Image (tube, rainbow, N blue to C red; front, side):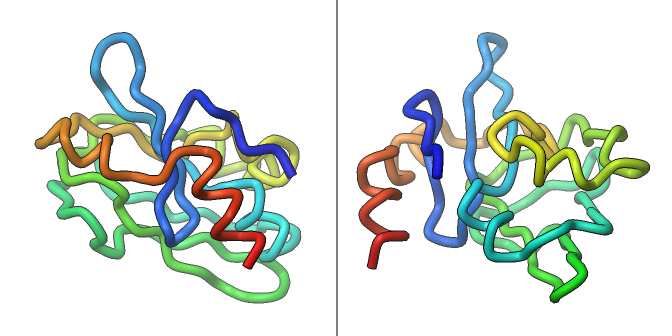
Length: 126
């Protein structure tokens, strides 16, 4: 299970990576996609939606079950990954690269409060 150090993690198994323009890319972790199995549908939040940290904002569905996506940061959704409409399995192929949505963070300090790779690894090892 790969846990890249270039991003932060939530306890609800989302990752957030700050891009060079200050926008945060958000996806689900490799651990989460492995637990779900083969994904068949992704419902991201709508562009323009303002999210509060911890708010349920989307859904990923697999052949086994559905799971909510929670916002790891507060902010405004500025983009969604349209490729996942036709190919949600891209998350299974590489969850660490298949971002679901991007948001403009409202509070940069929230990013620092997320788990680093080591802390997330310890969380999923429990």
